[in-house]
Image (cartoon, chains in turn cyan, orange):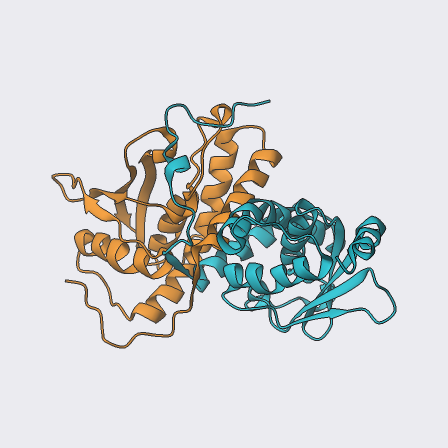
Amino acid sequence: MDVRFTKGKSAILERPLSRPKTEVSVSAFALLFSEMVQYCQSRVYSVSELQSRLAELGRRVGGSLLDVLVLREKNGKRETKVLNILLFIKVNVWRALFGKEADKLEQANDDDKTYYIIEKEPLVNTYISVPKENSSLNCAAFIGGIVEAILTHSGFPAKVTVHWHKGTTLMIKFDDAVIARDKGLEGR
Amino acid sequence: MSRQSNRTTDNKKMSSELFTLTYGALVTQLCKDYENDEEVNKQLDKMGYNIGVRLIEDFLARSTIGRCQDFRETADIIAKVAFKMYLGITPSVTNWSPAGDEFSLILENNPLADFVELPDNHNTLIYSNLLSGVLRGALEMVQMAVDVKFVQDTLRGDNVTEIRMKFIKRIEENLPAGEE
């Protein structure tokens, strides 16, 4: 394995993990995100490939964010129930990333493995106009990746897909084992 | 010194965390996609350039700042208005060359590189090189050709992060030269 740390400089380890005080402008983020989408687009042939590339980038963000959020918001305690981890995402993760809670969290009527997080206008889509010929493209796939990483690294492996429905809907499909385990925990 | 009017245009802010992590994810991806650090540096500069070309309009609209009298004023506005507006930091402007055509921006903290450490096998990576491109692209749109480079970087063990900017020439024609 590579040596991960720069020599002598471990000042990072001494720094507090509290919420950063600096704020950046949404324009700066929007321009950065736009470049990112264009870069990904230049290396793929289809909308679905583009979305999976964005999701891959999102997974990296989610992976880095999880630990610090659990520490900061939950005093280091991990969630063990499906509903709680979903609420953690809807409330804590969303607040840290976007400064607000997600608009809605719903469960599918006909399937206990499937949940939806609905965001009418996700920050990443605010300044993106989707070309007509690629109308299925939803750049919130990036957010889907973030959510997927947070769930998976928390011990709730799931697949997250992104759809244009009531704005943007993230469809979360948990692995069978996750739901089975959750049922076993019921009442405890 | 800067001719700033009182009118502030709506400028939405967000937590720097998502920005920092997103940039980190992008750099990681570039390191995977390209063979060596030089290529990644180039790609970051190119993306920054594209951003700068678009950012300048946003900047002029929001700041309502007019044409700068000289390069010193430009330096001040970049540091005190532009960096503040977009990244929430105010670098200091120092080390002017005697001719007044070259200066340094010293960044005490850099939102792009917050909590970042470079692994040993990337010691030629200029992690925040996006910024060089942004500055170059933005100034090019206001008819200033500049050379921008990182001369020091805390990520590589220096005490401060220093961006050196050198004025090359005024671009005479009004049409931008297109991207590279």
